[in-house]
Amino acid sequence: MEQARDNTNWCERESCLNVFVMLKHIASNPETPSAVLFMLSRLNIPGLLKRIAGNPNCPAELAGEIANHSLPEVRIAVCDNPFISEAVMTQLAHDTSPDVRYALAENHNLPISVLEVLVDDENPYVAHRATTTLQRLNKHQGKKGQVFPWLVRQFINVEQSSSG
Image (tube, rainbow, N blue to C red; front, side):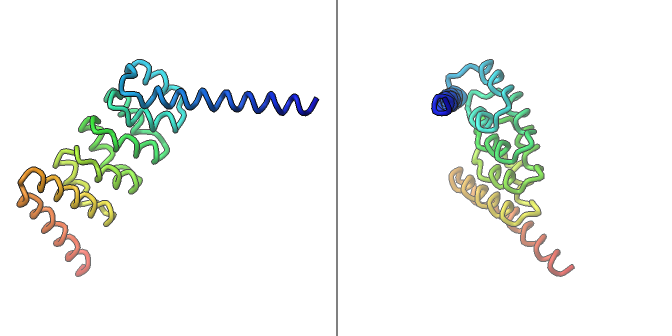
């Protein structure tokens, strides 16, 4: 009798795992309609939310909702989406988690204005990553001189804080 119950539990766990794997594939498929992504998001499962946030078909409104999730790893997934709105980018640039801000600073699709915020971040790793991203963007766009003012400002901030 006990063996039959263990087999039933195993089958139930295996079925749940298969369903979750299927849902993750649906959530990350760029051809999944936005209405389906909205429905999946309502399950509020962090693993699914991360897949939805990274989906290029994720609507801006939904990305904004996910950007307010309590778990930093879910908000980081929003940072990786190249199609998030500037408003969501700006919100994430002021996130309480330095890990979220660092992930955002790695996004090469950020507007210069958001990268400027991150260059001035209180966390030196975030500020450095944003500076590196700006340098790479300028190198690829042939505008090498534009990074210099941010580097100077960063240096001046460091000098002022060490002398004060």
